[in-house]
Length: 358
Image (cartoon, rainbow, N blue to C red; front, side):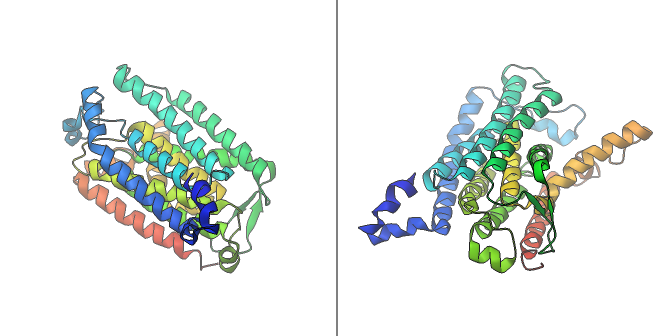
C-alpha cells in the first residue's frame, strides 16, 4: 500500500525513492510487525482472559504442565494480525506471490481458529478431527499450489542443495508435491508448539532465513552469482517473511517461559503454512527440511512413535513429540526450549552456508 502510494512521488521528491528497495520495505515491515505485536499483546491477553479463552491440558502430559491450565490461548491471532497489516502496508500489492502467501496464512489460520474455538469456547475437547483438519489444510494448499503452477515463469523443478546443476523436473507432479510441503510444514509447526516459546523461536530463525533466500531468489544478479533459481517477483516475499519473523519476536515477549499466552492452532498451523508456501515459491523445499529441522524432528518423532507402537507395541520415546521426551527425562522446560532454539540457529546458519556450497 505504501509502495503504491508513495513510490510514484519519487519523481517530485527524491526521498520517496527508498520505497523502491525491498530491503528498506522489509525493515519497515519488521518494525511495524514487532511494534504492533508488542503494543497490542497486553490488551489482547486481557481480552482473552475476559472471554475465558484458556488452554486445556492433556492428562497424560508432563505434570509440570498442569499449572498452565487456563492460560489464555488463541494468541496466534495477534501474530496473524501483525503480519497481515505489515505485509499489506509495505508490500507491492500487485505481486501475486504476496497474495498467495497471505491466502495460505489466513486459510490455515482459519482452520486453526475453528479448531481452537470448538475446543476452548464451545468446550468440545476434540475440536476438529485430525481428518477434518487434514482435508481443509489440503484444500488450502491445493488451491495455492494450482495458482503457483499457473503463474510459474520457469519449469516446475525441485532443486537440490549443494549441487548447482542437479534438479528434478516435477511436471504436473509439482502440484501434489507443493501441497504436501505446505500441509507438512503446517502440521510440523503445530506439533512443535508444546512448550513456552518452543515453536516461536525456530519460526523466527526460519522466517528470517527464508526472507534472505527470497530476496536472493528474486534478484537476478544475486541468483546468477549464487547459482540458485531466479524467481521473478519472489523478492517481495522477503517483506512477508520479515513481518512473520518480527511478529513472532514480539509475541515471544509474552510467550516466553512462563508464558502469559499460547498461540494455539490458529497461530501454529498458519505459521507452518506460511513457511511451507515460501519454500515452494523460492524453490527451496529441501532447504526447509534443513532450516526447519526442529519442526522435522518433532514431526518424525511422532510418526516413529506411532509406527513403533502399532508394529511392536513398544514406544521409542518416553513421550512424543520429541520435546516431551526430554521433559520426561528430567530436563526443565526452559532448558528444552533454549537448546532447541540453539539448534535452530545453527541450522539456519547451515542453510545460508549452502548458498556458497554449490
